[in-house]
Length: 449
Ligand code: ATP
Ligand code: MG
Image (cartoon, rainbow, N blue to C red; front, side, top):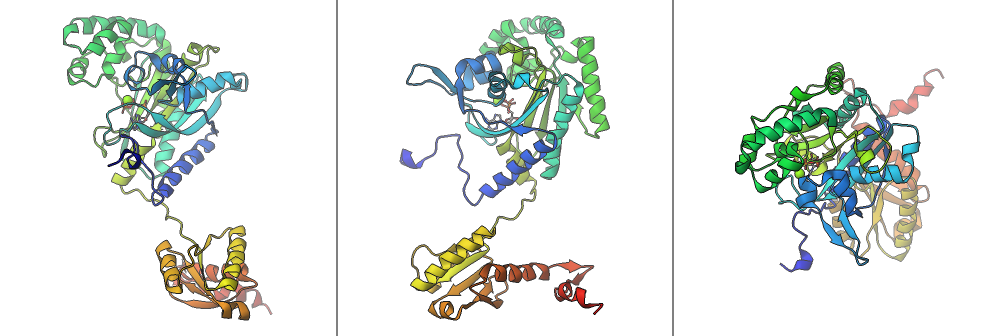
């Protein structure tokens, strides 16, 4: 196939017939975020490469292998964002949000770019719902963040995700842990992959996250980070668990989770599904107490998560989660002739101004063809207007699902449409198992007369 009609490997179109699902998921995410006090932040799709090297960590797979990095025409090294936290943190510092009342709670819906092997649930352009809470020290913040993700899943009626949590400690307790890891892995150094041998020196914890079968087999018996936590980190983790218990949120403590980014400290967590194969992590996040300082700001303990929207949708599809119905046009105006067309323009304009969706033919087609098109669009009502109707000022409004027709005055079209469509909606309404009597709405006031 010619290149110009072929999308880049690892990218995906969202077609007009599917977009309403994305809109529903995205508005649910933003709605939940708002309930927890998060406001949207929008940052550029590209940043200086250094931001990610520093912010994501140059011992991570993301920075070492997966970034879309290029020189722009001015010779600057630019990288398409592989994740959302670094950009949000940069903006937090650059725009002085760090001087406002803390915590600053921000959320975003963004595209991310990683040069990975495309497969189910793994794309080169994917989308995340992310939240960042800058400047919150208490374990309350960790538990609240975890519960926010849970509320998104609950509102979308996603089931069977399990929550795994861990604490990877702070630099103090981690020094001790790194020593133990180094000792353990050094003994089997020549079995490790090349990347991990390099990691052994710079960041041995990364080996726990290696996807190669040999390394992950060796990692299984490695020392466990939870045994090395300092008192403060241990207490913090205990409190997170206690708060989750209070919130009735179930979790599994999995000491193997280290997460793919270097900036994490203390709490890390993942929501995992078994319904979509090996790419089952739908949401991952945790605390990053050192990141803001690392980027040149004041010490600002913070935390966040990223939720993969494509993976979320895979889970929703696998579980047949309900979506709201796709919206259909309220009205299609079949217009025959010049005068009728002018009338159609007028009516459509008035309808739209009142919040209805209205359409008419844009191809000068025959009556039959217009009807067929209206049918294809799934319009709820149609109205046929020809010279006669314009002259008489009355037309027939037809309910396309029941076939029922009602006279409607063209001069007061919108209010007429409102009444008829309302009656129609109420007709389907049952109260205590009996059909709702629409007439009673208007008769109610007469009782005392
Ligand atoms: P994985 O271990 O699956 O590679 P990760 O640790 O690299 O994930 P994060 O950087 O924490 O993932 O990103 C947060 C979320 O974004 C993931 O849990 C996942 O849902 C989603 N995600 C990450 N990479 C991709 C990708 N290439 N395609 C689709 N979704 C992705
Ligand atoms: Mg990854």
